[in-house]
Length: 228
Image (cartoon, rainbow, N blue to C red; front, side):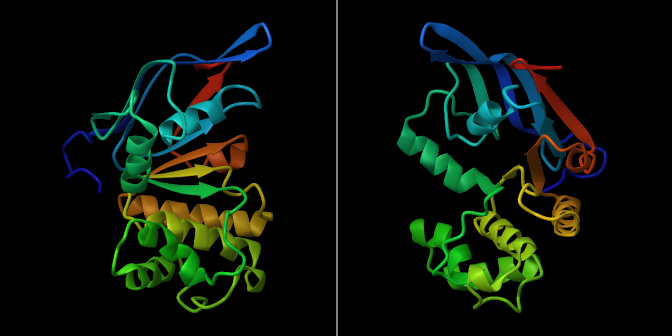
């Protein structure tokens, strides 16, 4: 939720001197080279940069899909930098909702069943009701029982956003969310992110598209592993 008027929002994501190194044979690549940044609760921020700049690596670390080689990542004040895979999985389930370019919907499941999945994995008993509410939030209350083959590309991404919302995470992390959409569907998805952010959701969008980044009041531009 957004901070009360007149107060400074708390940092929901903080990176401190993040370093990530990959080896290609004998060549060392510093994918992240001492990255410092902060994203406050209720912000909508774009992480931008060219291919190979380090933005995907930074996204994987923010999303607890990978760990830095050094430095610290704090989510809601919780230092996750040295967590085990099991603890990282728990953080992902509690704190982060993911939206991917390729939607990642299961084709044999309905929209409702796709959105239910994160709750079912966590053992929630009210999964169906919460999934229905999430789909209504993204304007798909009339498509609950449609399978992906019966939905448009823009509707696929709305289902994916509903799935990200259903666990009520601190952060929505979107990776190139309009990359597989035409311009009209892309604008509709970005308008939905605008609405979610206006209601206090913290949204981080990783993109190389300037038109998408312009929807965000703040941009973190990464180049050669450093935020510029």
